[in-house]
Image (cartoon, rainbow, N blue to C red):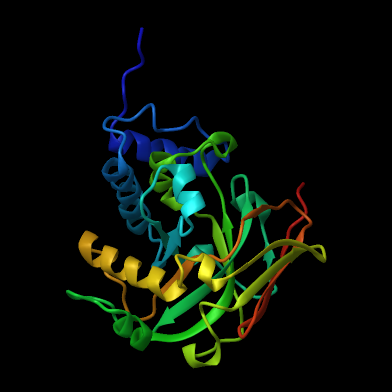
Length: 265
């Protein structure tokens, strides 16, 4: 007998259960009704509303799939996005409880902090640059509630764009202090390089990626606001991590950010 397909609310509940138990689930793409991007974002939004209702504070957004290679892998024709909550944020040098993230991997990014809202029609790159107060180097710790990272568009988007935690650097810089396109990135683990890249790898320009996000957030009714943090997308390949690892990210012009992953029990 063919298993009945599940709806948006049922899929959202499965993902919440995976978070609560730490046990990844089978891919959603073959289990949900109308398995397309709209359904995936509806699942994500259902959980966003749930978590806000539970008292979590929405503090920003993340942009994913900012390289063509990743888009092709996931079956996307544009980036995707996820929500950032306050309890996902860690500071430079903090110890990360590795059990908080399912199947963790790290990637190096530029984070932007907004001093103004990005709302309204016909937003431009100039609007984005004016709204950014500062940038910092950031380590995004991505995770997947889908078993074995067996993901396509429906799976990752529904799963809050495979979000986990993030670590913000403590050396804020204005946009005039570095080149967001040509800045180089090196991420190391236990002193050995594990990922290299540059700003240009992020949709050609992390500011262009942020403009895409700002327009998309207006479109879906969750516009970016003053005080929001934006993880603008990976500058290089992601890499797996485990308990005991020490990760350092350096971005030219933005300094370094570091974190240590708690030893697993």
